[in-house]
Length: 259
Image (cartoon, rainbow, N blue to C red; front, side, top):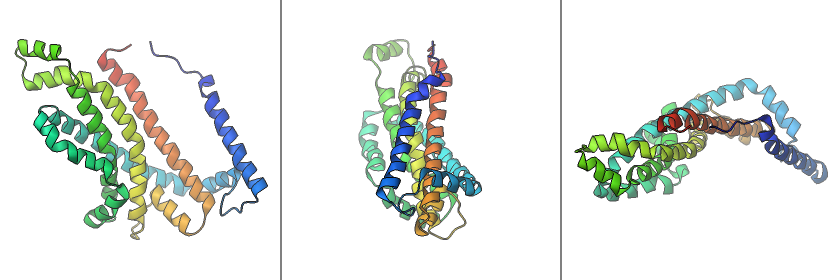
């Protein structure tokens, strides 16, 4: 049975947040820090409210890019993992390129993608796809090949085809690995979208994502709205992760037959 979550579960999180806000405010009082260096929590709240329309539009644009790139990574990553699970030779040939997605800094790839794809929404989605893809491929591949030899022998005994073995044996066994990869990629998707918007927004295009807003406010020295945008982007990442967690606990777990 799924464990019920009450409001008291969030008390430690709320308490830690309150402690951090208190330390933040004390640093400003006793450190005599100027607002351009570190604004007060209340100043950040006020800046967020004053710019609520712009921040809301930016969160929508960034969220749309993050969701699109994340969904694309789920589809492409799962299909790639399914292909790699069919042959050890394919895994040896493809895995170095999969690792390349994780090891090459996204800030080095993003300018090239901007040149190739333009200062467009699709460029942000493409960067998000690249940064979100590795956890899906890595985790799903591990789940697809982590099948005991006894089960494989049983399927061979009954004359199951490769496709039947993949769909009826390997895929159900890889669902938990897909959940894990999706949780990791959901947070990376928001990061990838914002990083891409840093570059897309610099091109002078009419792009209003959170990353573009951050770049503009940073250049103007408007620290309070910059931190408000940072809080909104963090909240967006939390929403992405919580949504994946909800799907993991409901639809996918029911498919696996868990209570």
